Length: 256
Image 1 (cartoon, one colour):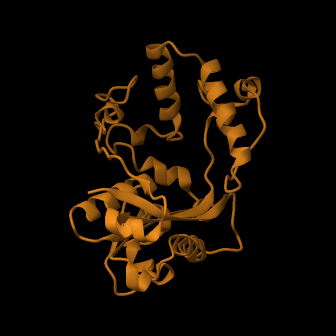
Image 2 (cartoon, rainbow, N blue to C red):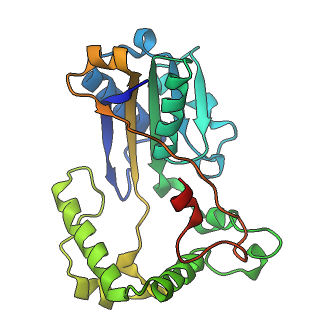
């Protein structure tokens, strides 16, 4: 069965959004998506997915707090403990399995509300062997980048070109939080974070929300003249152990 994206709503990403609550970010994104798809969420949607992690949200069982702003009261509601791409994959599986014809996927960030982001990220480390070592959890990003450069033959200059290209491309995206006109030389000269990773190599948390309306082929063709068809999804997990995983070419990416 073909599955397509028939509506998109984006609450523009910004470094901070003190004037909005996380509920208002979600509501805004949902209203934009429903208008784009031309649907009534109370009548036309069979399932709702929110992408959230309780640690980031500050609530347990976070999907209990999301139905109101999505128009999903007393409707099937699910939480995916991951990002929006994983939510989209879950929507595709729900539709292909016959659970629903139309699924709404919501993914958001209110990172500016988090006071101890580094401490939360550190919970992802092995609690016995790695977390007790202390330090900023993103030192692993530096180690992984170093392993990649050594194993692939790429250079820090190559990475600087990628970062500069992406940041300049964001100037064309009105919803981007950190567009900037920078050169590869400026990226390479930016302050070091976790060697060889530098400040302008790394992404910065932002606030925002994206809502997708996803539908099976029959429903999609009635909602959008040109649905964006999902050609395939892949799913894989690597070893959680830093000592046994493949560092140069991520096995999970290859398997997926």
